[in-house]
Length: 52
Length: 380
Image 1 (cartoon, rainbow over the protein chains, first blue to last red):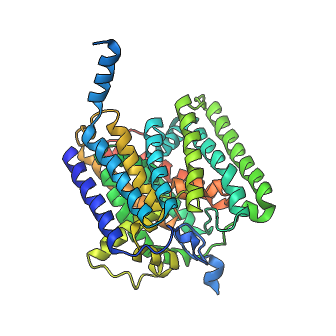
Image 2: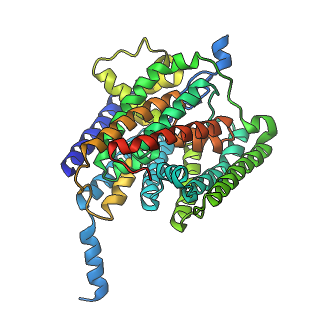
């Protein structure tokens, strides 16, 4: 199990670092709730907005 | 050599240096990456996540086991500790979210999507034997079984993201927030009163069933510490702590890498998810705390005993973890989060959806507990 963990840790951290270095990160970290019209932690719109 | 020196030497030998160093080094790398980008709040979120991982592991804080003990035999100590955690967090979240521009509570629409998602999540958490936070800290803490649950949790949440728009179309009403009706302090009073009322009901049920309802001291300390850290996450991220959106982003990025096209998926066209998919994982608040939490639990586990030295459990148990993870991932996306984002964050924000999520997830747990023996797992 230790070998599996070592591999997952290396692959996971490697993927995070590679993603960070190849993707934009323009402003402070945000949650989808920071965006206008978001009605849930995942950024889903409100039912009232969907009816319009 | 003195007894103290011998004892210290034994303690040092017990440390699992490779994994302890890897966990601390990994955290340092993440903190450095976001600090170099000039985002101190992001660095704070990684460190707070690390502390949460340590706190959960050391206090053995488990929503899943607490709910199961309550449903199976009436024991209410763990559930009451969870309510204490939420009350601590609410003290800051309700007023700050209402009074300070840029801050907001955890809200969600109330409708079939919330109830169905939470119910399915409840089934999954009992099969996997861990919820959102539980999966993170036990996977980080060296449980290979929960590593499988985490992988399927991620897959399930991506599938859920594709289904959520259809479930939202079933209807619902906009979020109901106590502070929106009663102001920040009235909202806080109602939130604390609702937590106290539920705690009283839970204690009375436990007493009627002849079960213990006093939380262990370590769990109480853990609840207060985790509540305090939740406040820290809220202040650094401007929204209550959430776990599962990060999983959805990780899974979607992997799927995109494998060639899956999300441009036709409505969920991924909403502004928040669209930005999260396009930008660095370290630009998403839940990913920052999730990664910190995994590494924190790993460091705490490696500092206590040899890391991940246990044998793999039986295949039936691994299958339960996989099914549970998949159900939790799907349910979390359809039901707007897990125990942390929906229940802790929702109730601590004074949002009605948090309580509805709790009741629906408890219902799912009852089914999940009945299914556990099929996979060789105890009902208690």
